[in-house]
Image (cartoon, rainbow, N blue to C red):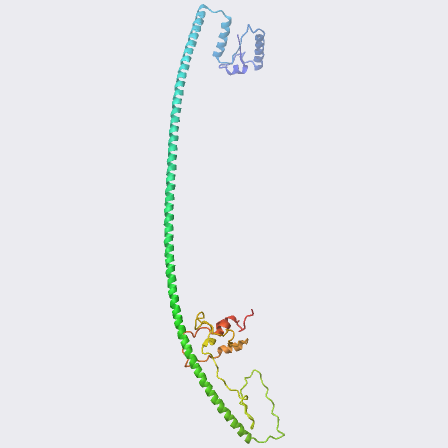
Length: 389
């Protein structure tokens, strides 16, 4: 029996002071070890090499196993070995039975577990089926509720639409009634305004007729007075001419020539009374007679059309065209000073015989044709000139 141990391991196991052999160096121990290992390797059947670095029990087991193979057994050892074998077989049989019982129990438990799992799966499937059925039922109820809600919403919207249409109809009927009432009121106001206008027109025409008659009488009286004054003035001038002709001294030949005065074209020409020479017969054509103005009885030529009468009702006079009558238009001057002087000139006072009518502020024919003074002032610039178009 050769116990092989490494010198370093053996040194570490020393518990007491090493002896002389143990105190040798490591090289010595390695040479001794190599020699014994070589000897054991040469005859392996004779030497048993055991690793002494293991635990003591492991070394004892290896040595006993080798001795059991080499040494003969005694009767006691044979019986012990047989008992050990029978015990081992019994133990193996017992273990086999236990294993079979265990396996049977495991199979039974597995079957029970599988049955329980199947039961659980069936219960789970039943539960899922019930849940799905309940879910389908809830979905059907939800869809039915949604359909009912949609129907309710549609009914509510239909009622709201009907109410809105009824309200719109009521509003439209009220608006139509208001418009009819407004139209009736406007028609009544127009009728009243037309009646008032016709009444004012009638009063204005009556006032115009009265003023025209008074003006005609005044013109006739003025014409008569002018004729009488002209006749008296002509008679006086004729008498004065004859008297001056008789008392005038003779004109000498060396009389100086009086220079002719310079005539300014802007000066106003004064009317000089004409004295006929003595002994000359005055012809009828030499003296201009003042003739009275002849006007129509109807004052249509002095009033803008449509002011004092309704043109739709007025029928045109027989045999008279609207272009045959010529009206006199006011003169328009481009001179701003003349226009300003004309505007600054005081207006002719109203005669005593003229009555004030509501239509005095209406535009005249000249205002309608040429524009009023306000329009003229608006159309002119700051320097009084009209803007060039």
